Image (cartoon, rainbow, N blue to C red; front, side, top):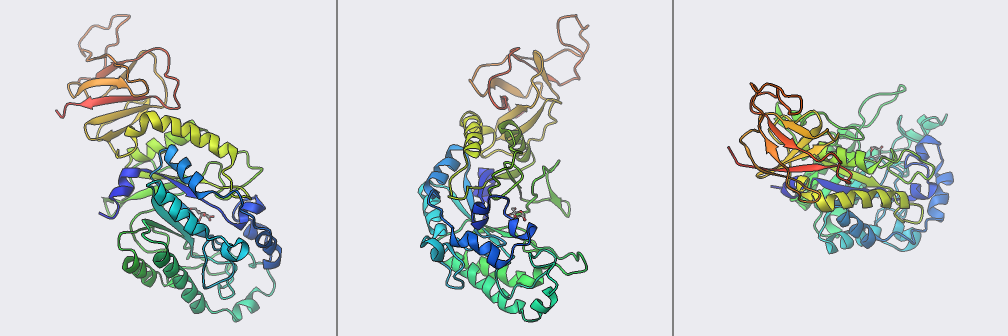
Length: 421
Ligand code: GLC
């Protein structure tokens, strides 16, 4: 029951915002450039999110057809976007703003579900031990520094901050922990579920927010799995049973604002990824990285607007939709919602598209973009192929007749009304 809204929404927005947004060169900048606390502190001292507008983000998410939004409360750098009593490394200290409060109020104001991201990792906390993922990992005195660090104190801090977030901001619908890395590397240990006391942390989540979805990155099973920056090729299963899953994706490969990045994905690719996920009963969480002042970056706004225009006409093939038990034609991807079957045409064929196994099962066909009726026919497998009429399709194939010109939309969709036969 916890996940009914999640399965229905299918499409959410991820928001990565923090000190790294001002560094403007990926959210792992502190790690990649081995920045010391003192070097990284400059982004705290000059943090100025004057254009961070949670209500504008909420409206943008809604216009893009998204049903939930997830904000980074704390990323790996340890900077907190809420007024935490457990550290002064927060947006409240820096600029007297509780950005999590602004966020949850804005999302609820637009009727969107509220998601929080929280990093288990904390490169700022004095008791978080230096491991192969830590910015100080190459320091000659890393081992000596670790001697004075006590992960049990960090665990208390981690659990305390989660308790703050789950008791101070009303109902939270979704919590994205990030991430567990138990494997050894470069001769050093990573951090596994025991480092977080994951079982106790999950139990606290259940106690404080019983209706909240929790992801799998505590390193123990929870409510949904989180493939990242790749597209699964079939519904995800565990022990032979389908699992709830959500693919988190970026617009350009970076979660945090990356000013000079040139890998912006097209709206067409992103919509294809979205419907592909839905076709396999999955969700897509699409990320934006607001810039150093907290503004939605114009190139991201433009991409979201294109997606939003497509969703305005085609949301029925995504929201409340899921896997369809039919073999799609080579040109496309099916999703299904009730008695509606949606064919997303990744390639526009000449004149016809042939749908295996659908003869006698469809009462009406139309282009979803303009609602225009489409003629259908069932070819007779024994019919002698005339030089102008399609023939030779397998028995039970339904042929849909198409205009020569591809509709001028990001991804054309044919809506088929199923008879239920
Ligand atoms: C990876 C990245 C992290 C990002 C997360 C989003 O864990 O390390 O920076 O926030 O993916 O899922």
